[in-house]
Length: 330
Image 1 (cartoon, helix red, strand yellow):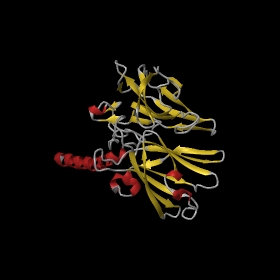
Image 2 (cartoon, rainbow, N blue to C red; image 1 turned 120 degrees about the vertical axis):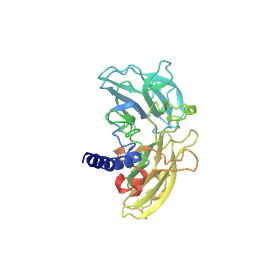
Image 3 (cartoon, rainbow, N blue to C red; image 1 turned 90 degrees about the vertical axis):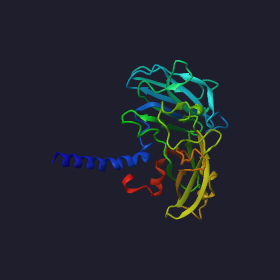
Image 4 (cartoon, helix red, strand yellow; image 1 turned 60 degrees about the vertical axis):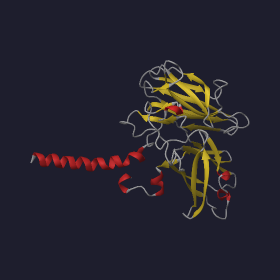
């Protein structure tokens, strides 16, 4: 009887474990980016000058807390919107229960106006990152007085401090996203702001010299695009009656702004989509390594008159959005 019970328990454990393991690939990126960030974080910011850049006339503030413990060696490296690393890095010592609000775009002449902050603990050399000593909370405040808006940009957390292992790593990067856009007429304008890190941010290959090298930091899977090549994205556009209208391709770098009218004329075509459009955006694949589909995340801004409707894109695994993920994995 004992052998029978052991056998039944083993079968039961396998039955329970199978769905969990099946969900592993699609669970990456599902953590709450405003939760406790372990290992390190990536924080987008926009501080464009009066003309040019991602959003002219903007400033950005990093808001970071250290609720769990000290982060005396908290340190930041910077990448511009095209994923080119700045030679300048900045330290920001944090004590337990500390809060720091720091303007980023003008912190040093060598820091790019727009781009990504990569933050963790610095090693003794001052030129390489190590995992954080204690978890943090972080976000970026993006303010544009000329356009009269204040926006919150959620970070990328490399690892979730309250979840076992690295199943929720690199949140909220996913391989697909969806969004609605009203017709581009009558003062309505929709813009996407997209973040697509490359392997200068994370890589398991030492020669890439990534700021977050694996296995010291969690590995981004699928692997990100290599430097010098923009991350490919592709999209399917439908009207509000689920009729397929268009598909198109585009690209993304570390921080990319895309007005929807620059992606396809269908967004302003009252004949095809008088009540707006629904779009499925997904990471592209390629025949040479890294193969993809590539991960990304971003925000949608709808502006009309004095209104500013801004928020993070709804996202998911590419197979989930396509409706092809196995039932057991949902």
